Length: 322
Image 1 (cartoon, rainbow, N blue to C red):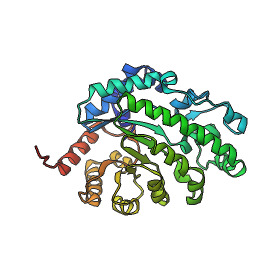
Image 2 (image 1 turned 90 degrees about the vertical axis):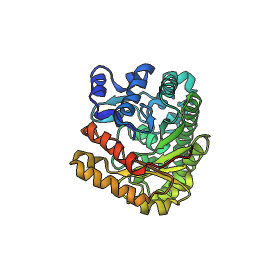
Image 3 (image 1 turned 30 degrees about the horizontal axis):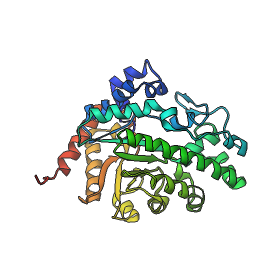
Image 4 (image 1 turned 45 degrees about the horizontal axis):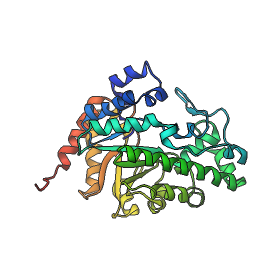
């Protein structure tokens, strides 16, 4: 899962000297940080080190990453004029360093290890732009959606166009899989999701020609709608049993998940029991990507992460015909 390297001491040493955006803007350093958890934990794919707010900087938004808070926008997007000032940049001009980092990671990995490029879902990023910082209730977002839907749709359209170009650049640079993190979309009702979000998720996910993963948190009530919007794989958080969610999503799609990341803060026997339960719910069906139900918590023991990967590999190994 994204942020897999946050618990590693070698990552923390780098963060003592460089902030997140600085790492992203230095391709060699970004590639190093991306590869650290692959080498440390023996996972099957590398999730590119990046931040979901990177593409909007090129749109003309000033973003600060405040430690302990998250993305902060001092001039939130609240009006049609604000949206009108946003550009739709080409990634080769706005984030060439991201594309170079993807190339470096692809060159460093074996052919059987995937490079996962990602972007934020349009709703989640719009939430930061409109609220100005992380929010629990998304009051300003919902006010804009309800009172000025035309401006909301204009914002979502520009974000979707920007993210589509951004993902296209990552694919051209070597990304094998694309994941869309619509992390906070679970705050919406089903009706609001269908009206204000689904068309843009559909446009984004159907606009790329590599396998896609569609992920959100708190989305148990939205899983069937998210599956209909798009994604070859639906990411599941830890709040719903994997087998129940897979029935809702439909077995023609894959699922990713969904061990509670907080379980890694407890003793190993609890981690092992949780992992085996997830695998039991998957019932050995093809199409399950074992993963955590959200990002790795920084306090996690790297040794337990490695043991977890080894456990899953051992329990799911199959003979591949020569």
